[in-house]
Image (tube, rainbow, N blue to C red; front, side, top):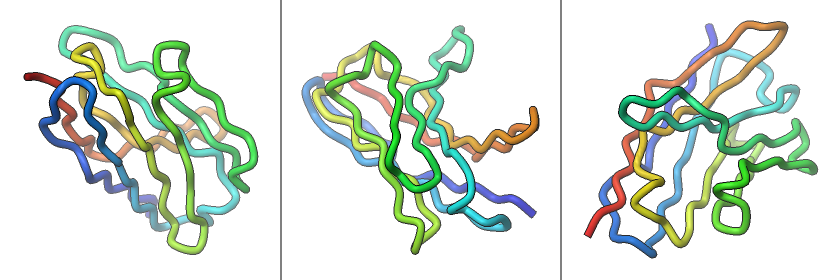
Length: 116
């Protein structure tokens, strides 16, 4: 049974940093691309970053390039999202995702709020 459990969200001031974690279980973690999505109130869920199975290749939404870094530790079955220089518009629920053959698995999400 695939399980994804996010942690690390919270309230941070503009310009601050957070590190999100997603602990995965129930599948061969090192074999899958992993993704982070975010969903702001009233908005559709959108892709923030992706990382290849070995962690060599990454992709980012234009809005976070240069500020966010996705990484993974396959020995710990965990994917991370380091978020720097946070802006109020980054406020959203952040979700960990695995997609394979059109089937999505999601975590419960972790709230990130950027506000002074």
